[in-house]
Length: 135
Image (tube, rainbow, N blue to C red; front, top):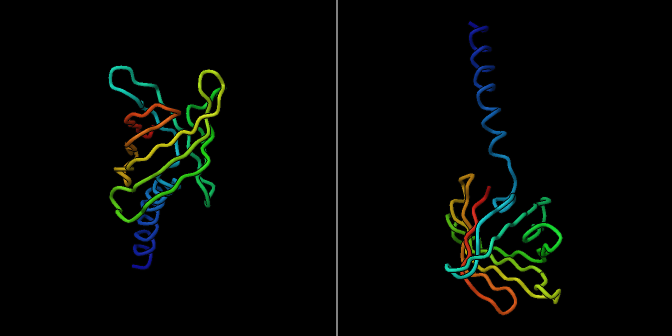
């Protein structure tokens, strides 16, 4: 009888451990995101790489030689199903002049792997809608 109980406990633990490891991926904004921003007629490609160190969110808008460093992320957690997020970054325009980038939007599908972050995007003097999906 004791052997049966021990085997049942070991089997239950073996089934739970892989499940628990999938749930531990960090902050819901962490990861690579891809999508677009701007007018529907001529959208701009948009890539975000957001990191979480356990205390703060950091990252890059359009990683690469002309990437913009994310300097601030503020989140309103009051609605557990859809967080309000404001992301601010320092970028450069085509001539190399510094421009502020602000994404003000909503993070949805928080419990799913493929989350969606969408809202309004402003970069320099341009404004438009944006949508990115976590890759």
